[in-house]
Image (cartoon, rainbow, N blue to C red; front, side, top):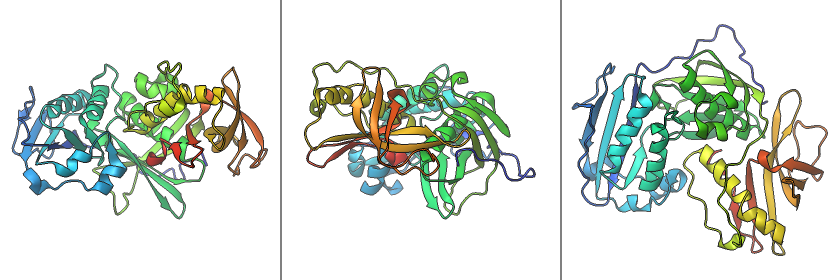
Length: 392
């Protein structure tokens, strides 16, 4: 269910790492360049607990190993295929107090950009090309940082439902976050809740109970993609699974709901047919994936649908429907009408599990601003979209 409660009053409180630390592997087409980071003490190895900022640089060469093609396909962002032919590898690790951790991530990242062409965040496993890495690093350098940029939401199916883990928060001194027992239809909402909880933790500090409110977030990036979330996250110390490699892990139980997903402003695509539209940049996070989907929906796809899709083509969207209490169920529908006011009329393709007033095949209306993702089925059977699918 969307609303999940803590089952024991005696559960251990969440525990944060003692400091903030991270590591980046730098892959280079030829020899890696030098790495210069002003203001950080250079050490042969980092201390167990850093009271002052420090950095360690190791020149591994190809002994470090390279990600394989399967890893790049799953966790690559941008044009990362060149990593397979990299000639040199360098690893930079850093640590320091949690205060100023986001700015430290930006500082180390900007130095790494000058040394190589591809970058692996070793705390999340994500691999980036220069453009995608620079965009992520910039989000840590903002006055109100988005600390979800260099993170990974990874899901694994278990007997009791989906287990969702957010990796990579240790670089800003937070525990990684986990949600368990997520039921079918709740994946999107819980992914939003987990990433918004992470941002709230950074802005408000680690607490056993957090008020998670989209309109109160300082980060404009996270605020714009938080789907109007309103609720409470309850945290406790989590027991890592056998495959988890984390310094600390906090279990999150979220109770609340969403008021919609406001789309970002999209560039004009006048006179551009959908087939000629440039594909959106490869998203590196769930927030970027959702924004990429909305940019297509509010631009070329809206125009193409208005003009008329080719015979055999169809547009499907995923949207939230209110269930019992404050719960939300995310369902797919095939779009039949696109009204001038921005609302969509369609036929439900999913069988609701909790919204008892609806059945598969029912005609429904949704607001475009609340849509989470889309799939465009072309006349030849090929598909586009589902940009959030890789993160869920």
